[in-house]
Length: 332
Ligand SMILES: N[C@H]1[C@H](O)[C@@H](N2CCC[C@H]2CO)[C@@H]2OC[C@H]1O2
Image (cartoon, rainbow, N blue to C red; front, side, top):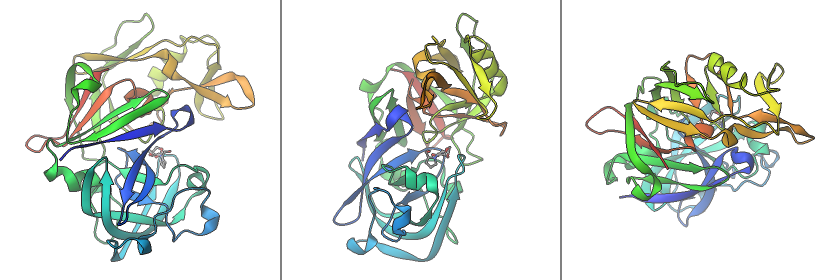
């Protein structure tokens, strides 16, 4: 098996939404594919109307193949303090033509206000390791883990783009989506994340510093949260940049020309264009102050390498059936 699904960015590439078919007849919901979590959960007909503002709802009673997992519940909270919880069904799930017949579909009975406000996001499809799935009393597997044995290759790939649709592929590495070689690096899955070593960094006219740090590849995080001292050194190159203490984030004049940011994987070097790092207005009402796509991590012990970094490359998430899991990066 292999398949490919188009993923479309929200405004400012805040998140990328991908159509997923659930049930019989198929109910299509647009989900946020998240390599930083491991629950597939959806907005549902079981939610109070006050929690819904335009999202598509999965209604298990309208699917002839839906079966409730008796007694199962789930409860998740995310790095951005959003949260949701509910009960569990199994149903047919199809992503880009790859199908699994009894995928745990976690239906929300409660969602936090950030989700209610996020009107086009119908839920999440977790692609981190199944060890951090929140279903109790019996943990469930991610969609990727469930389809793995049927895939032509034990991989899924992310080709996210700047202000344009990209693709998530399953079971195939599409050579037309990258140039040059793929550089692979081992993954430490002990925290349930795709955690790897960034070999070092560079920016502007400074030479590359081989100062390794750990980070997770997180398609569900918008920005790139990197070690505070590196973020500080980067924004010292930007005239008028300052750390907005209220936001705990760097802002700068919107007409700034931002340096490219170089990051290393093994012996390879990749470039995040400065244009990507001039992320968005801080506030719609002030057209002169802009918000950086690189920000300091919150000192949690690892960097969170989100879409700002991932969209500058072609990324292979390789479950490595014989070997340990690994991540591959290529230019494109
Ligand atoms: N893995 C991330 C997750 O995808 C993010 N959000 C959780 C719910 C929607 C999604 C996009 O905002 C949140 O920020 C960091 C971490 O948690």
